[in-house]
Image (cartoon, rainbow, N blue to C red; front, side):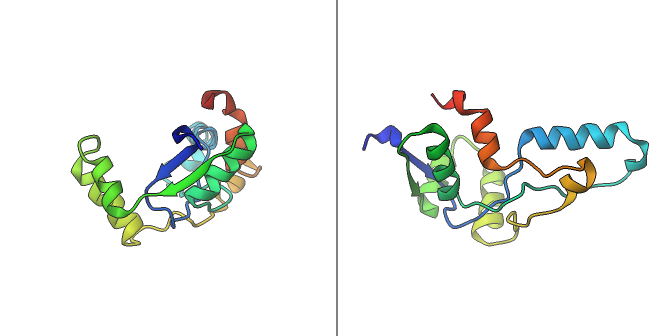
Length: 134
């Protein structure tokens, strides 16, 4: 398998309910255009918690390519981030995901409640952006 067929990521055991940027924009437009939301805050999420390997599996199906996921150790992840990411962000990522201070796997009903439709899945996002992966 060619090196380009391997997808590497930090925090391989951490599921995240990824939210489609389209849904973020739709929620933002909705709440900004309706005065009834003034002063309120909303926690939003995507519809399903997926680990990095799950997301790679979805991409492989959508792209019709064989992809393999390889998780990075904490030391490898930190080394790759250093020099490209400010130290305070690296430390926050490790507190959130390695130490468990943040649980981004929680699926919230907010998108459905505000927009009257389900949030888009990672698979829908991948299908809409498949051309960017060629």
